[in-house]
Length: 281
Image (cartoon, rainbow, N blue to C red; front, side):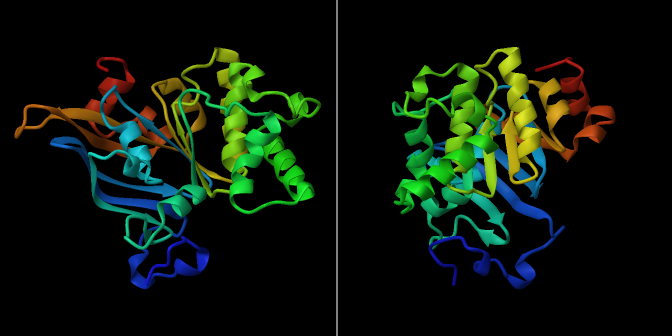
């Protein structure tokens, strides 16, 4: 039976694993309810390892809701209810014996607004490893340096690691949050509109960083910026909303999912073309 922690030795699930062997996350008939509201439905997609997958679509279409399903952040919302399956290396993340805490160690998240802790730069990055049992200063020093290097921030902060992370610029704070996320060695990094609060220069640095990071991590990013999705992602999922006939309320649906170059050049669904060309949304 599935153990409390998602480990590589759990992942040989026989015929439960289907599709391309590079598919690391697979959703099947995923739907999310918030109380009586069906927020999003019929989400079927495969996230491929060492690629950047972008979620695009108008506000309220379920992009962030689906993103939060991928590491069980919706568990923290009392009225949220999940249907369907989310499989990580073939393991059902919503199996009762799978620990949500361990899921979030494997699948980290960077939020829309930079949210460094009111601690030093060093302690921000060391926070997760300390919780995970890393105690020796030399080991923590190594983790902090490697994480800051991976987040392209080390050279900018290496002489002031004991100063507050809140004293950094907005773009630096977001990279600090990325460093804090990867310090616990996740395999997947989820990003919920990571550039929406940043200026164009800081946004471009985050985009460059994402390209550098995908050699080591799998990245899923929610963005309202279609140009950003076109620039950084390998695959794109386009969501929109439809009126739910049962409630007259709008429900998010996944319209199209595929290679970014193909979707932007030759979308298969008219709704995708209308959104990409700016005719709605």
